[in-house]
Image (spheres, helix red, strand yellow):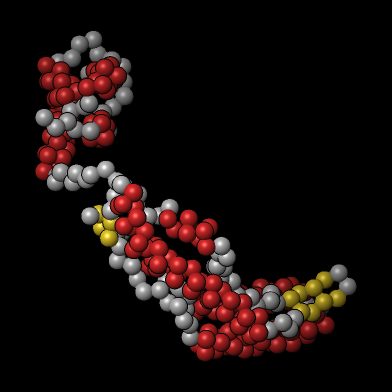
Length: 267
């Protein structure tokens, strides 16, 4: 006979109200108690009985009926659920079968991430402007934040990289993985164009900011100057965010690879 897990019994208890214990249970309360205890694992029944007796003693017949109906529905759903498949214990051969699938792709992903990291380091260093857009005086300074581009840097050590991903691989048996193609080459022209466009847009914001800021500083309109700094800084931040989004499009397909590892099919 299948028993309902404690979680199902706890679901039924959510209908109960706290209160003082009753001297004796009425027949319908006693019947509900026995049904609930029968749904639990035997070693849990002695611990659950006192609390159930106390709670059931406060319920009327309609509340008891609703609780019993919920219990019966939970038991019916459990009985109708397909049984969990039974698998043989995992072996070293099973784990080797898994590794033979994902390790070559993992190595390609590692090499692709290193290559992309080197490419972006070079192109970003060459393409982003180093010019400073700021106005300042005695004890004050207003400036546009420098344009930067951040991306997730490659892990330089393969063993550290491999261990990170192997922790995501199921270890309880033999699996098939639908691994994606790993991008190993990149559109350098498109990346260079995205960086150049961001640099051009940033320079336009910077020149406008510097010209307006100089006039406001000369007129000592520092409140307006502060607002200009915030507004121009937000424009620069939007340019940075757009650039990083475009750079991420060209990055190796790490997310798809992780998803494939997590969604392997048990054999």
